Image 1 (tube, rainbow, N blue to C red):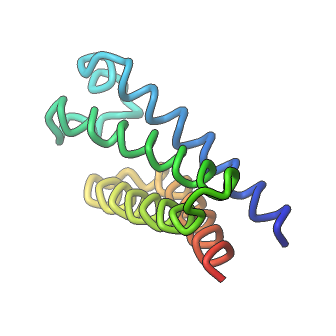
Image 2 (cartoon, helix red, strand yellow):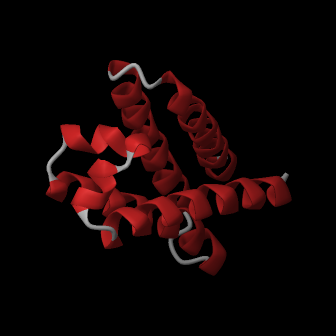
Length: 121
């Protein structure tokens, strides 16, 4: 089971790290101008950067504490935080009738919950 948890945590970390770094380094105008990222127009540039920062911190937090053995209780907490973040993203997409984007949120929520409960136990 531990191997599966590491795989799930790795997928979760890579997905959030990529998305977070993208939001941090890409200018807001370019993000808001992308039709697949139209949700960003509902938020200020600082909020989009904050979301990116939370994704990067969550990606690091879901792997690093458990891998190093330093405060490993933080890994399931980071996974739970990523689940909450994705639940918020699901709500934004649902409110905007962007249903084609919600399956990714559901998958990432499921992975985060699995990792959070798997490493908490």
